[in-house]
Figure 1 (tube, rainbow, N blue to C red):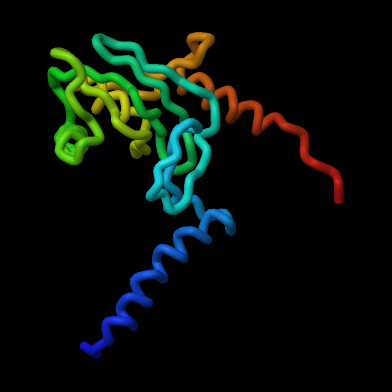
Figure 2: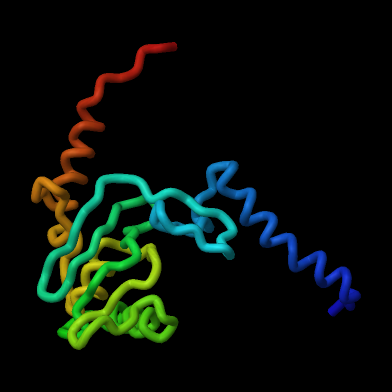
Length: 170
């Protein structure tokens, strides 16, 4: 392995940080740090606003707000979940334990956990299951302010897209 001097190593370590700062400018949002609009962490490389229709999760001891996004399902900081674990898949259990271990989920009172930062879950089901402490179908559980499920809103959006007239501006 070739040897790099200490100054050269320092220079090399700055490249990823600089690159991550520039990626959102060219539309690559996979590495953006998502935060609620009021948050402004001092160590953030790039902060992407959390946009989209808000959906809430209300189950036993669980209250959360999230948004569906191309990167996953974003749950906002401050969400409350059930501390007691019910039946869930091994993958959701590992994720829940990992979030507890790294401090993303912390104890809140005797019966709940609280999300300490905005977090991007792989899916609405993983978000609902991890927070509720048991397996949930996230597309059915997350509801908008009108009581419509995420599934209903996604289907309505798909129908609207299919029936939209072609743009003849050529």
